[in-house]
Length: 127
Image 1: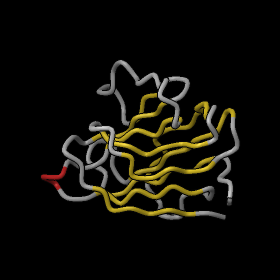
Image 2: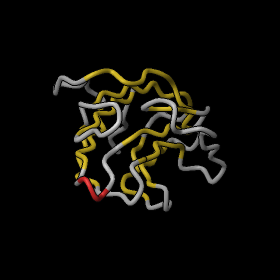
Image 3: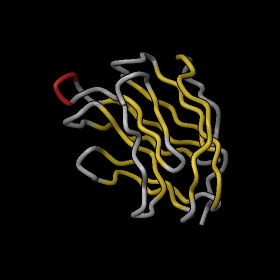
C-alpha cells in the first residue's frame, strides 16, 4: 500500500496526471466536467491559489475521506511512470506504476472548487 499527499497551490485551477513520456496528448477541452482524459493524460480541477491550497492524495487504496466519485477510467503509462503536473509543466510527483494501462479513480469534495482530491491508481510499484 502506498499513499502520497501534497498541499498544492496552482496559478490555474487544474492539474494533470499523465505518462512521463514527452509524447503526452492533453485533453482538448478541459472545461466541461471535473475530469477529462486522453489515452495518456487526465486533467482535473483543484483550487486556484487565490482560493487556497488543495490537498491531493495519490494512492493505490480506495478513498477513505468520503466525497463524490468524479472519474473512473484508464490511462496508458508506457514509461511506467505517471506524473502529477500543473499548467506550467511543473512536476509535483512522479509515481512508479507497472508499464501499460493503469486504472484511475478520482474522488473530490466538490466538482469545481475541491479542497481535496483523492486519486486511486490500480497499482503503484515500490522500488
